[in-house]
Every structure is written in structure tokens, then in C-alpha cells.
Length: 385
Image (cartoon, rainbow, N blue to C red; front, side, top):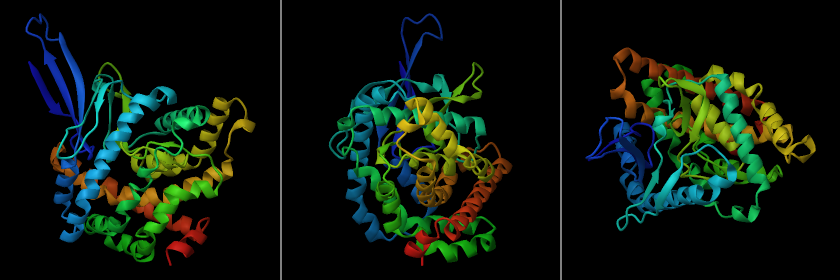
């Protein structure tokens, strides 16, 4: 007998992840079962979440984007299949073991990735949960190791072959205002957000800057690219668990490599810190994160001279990435909250989740504004005035 249930509810939007349990007719123990995971690509989750948010996106735009959404889904699933079959063994990064992967053709052929059941040794957390500084350091160490492998393997294996998804997040820039507004209206703190929105709306709605940040900024800084996960948020990081199921400070796996692409070595770090940390932890982490990443690279390469980056350029690259990822983090609050609101244990916890996200967003706005008034003032003058 085979049973299954969706373990991805409220955490992922480009696929459904089914945990399948196979019980055998000759089993003599309840433990004599087989667990495995089927990841099925599809847009149903994100469409349902978008309907709940009731974004004011006109009908013409929705119809026009249907073909683009299908192409994006097919392309993203294809890249993930290629990652697991070709790149994962070379990059030596924690990820699930994959047994079989089939491409998707929307309307013609179902796609799937059959992988090991990581729920037996790891858990994800919500956007509305927090992490600690030890976990931040753990993730940075894995980034550095993955980037070292990335920069020292045969570059012809990947350079220039994973470019399409560079524009994946920039594509939502024109909708960011529509996505942020419902969150602010529900926040009960509109007067706190208003000055930032009025000042920065043109900047965070500027697709030209979003594309520059993702596709060109690291090139202008003369920094060798790496393969970027692209969606390093709480639902795509599995933390190791102990025998009682309690989350530990070590990683079990990075999952969901659907929008993997070539890009800046600071892209995943910026997304990780803006999405997974509250303002307190993120601000604390930003006091040491880049220097710690650089130290990890020195250990990987064996000497400072072999590291192809400088701390100064890494900080600049991080700032470019932060200025886009901060707004993407805010834009998904309403969608993620409505996806999990009815799953909260009680009303007070649900309210606390939302309050946590609102303060997180406010701190992001404050830090974006501070950056655009300071070290990145030239960027604001070019793209936001």
C-alpha cells in the first residue's frame, strides 16, 4: 500500500513535494516501511497564494504572462534536474540524493524528481521563524566551500550555461509595489512605512536596477561568478535534527535549486540574511559575515593570495544584492503569511508571526534607506530619483 501527503504546504510555490510511504504486505513491523519523496513541478501553489493575496494585477497582464510562466516553470525544473545530475557531485554541497529526474512539458508531459526523504534527518523553518548567529556561520561556511569548488572545477562545465534565471526575480520588480502595499495596509504601522515608500518607490520598482544588480554588478567589479542557488530562503534550507526532532545548528541540505543561475558570490548571502533573519540577527551578522566568508575562502584555497576576491569588492557586491533582496523579502510577506495563517496553533501565534514580519520589513526599509543615503548614494541618484 502506498500513501502520500504534501510536505511543502506554505513553504514552496513552484512545486508540490509529496512524502510517499510504502507499506509491504509481508511487513511484520510498523517500522518496516519505505519513505521517499516525489517533487512535482507546477504553478498551482503560487496561483492559490496569489489569489488569497488579491493583488490588483490586470487581466491582460495575467493572460500575457501565462506562456512566460509555463516556460519559466519548464526551464527552472530542467535546471534543477541538471544541477542534481551534473553539478551537485562536483560542488560537494549538502543536498538530497536524487534517484531519477524527468523533464516537464506543460500540457503534454508531467515532470518529477524522485529523491531521498530528508524529513527523516532534517527540518525547514518558516519565514516567520528566526535563526541564530551560529546557524548563520554554518551557512556561510557552506557557501564558501561551494564557491571554492565552483571556482576550481572545469569552468566549461557550467560557465555561460545557466544564465536564463538571472532575470527570474527581476521579472517581479514591476509588481513589487502591488505586493508590498497590502502588507503595509495590514501592518497598523502605515505612518512608519509611508516616508520610506514615498522616497524609495521609484527605486524598488526600477527593473533596470534589479537586472544590473543580478546580471552586471559583479562583472563591473571584476569578480569571477559562481553558481547561485537563487532562492535561499527559510523553506529551502533544511536544518539537521536530533533524535527527538529538534532543530540543530548544522545543515542537513539546501533544497529547491529551480532558479539556479550564474551570478554574484554575494547573491545567496544577501537573500539568506534578508529572508531568514530578523533585523537584530541580520544586523549582527552583517558586522562579520563578509570577513568570515573571506576567512573561510582563505582556508579553502590555502592562502589569501589565491582568493579571487577582496573584502572591499565583496562588501560592494553584497550591497548591490542587498538592495534588491531586501524588497523581494518584503514583497512576499503577505503571500507567505496567508499561506500559513490557518495553520498557526492559535490566534495569538498568528498575530505574532505577522508582527515579526512587519518589524523585519521595517528594519529592511531603514537599512536600505541608510545605504542609499551613504555608501550607495550614487546608485540611488542613478536609479531612484
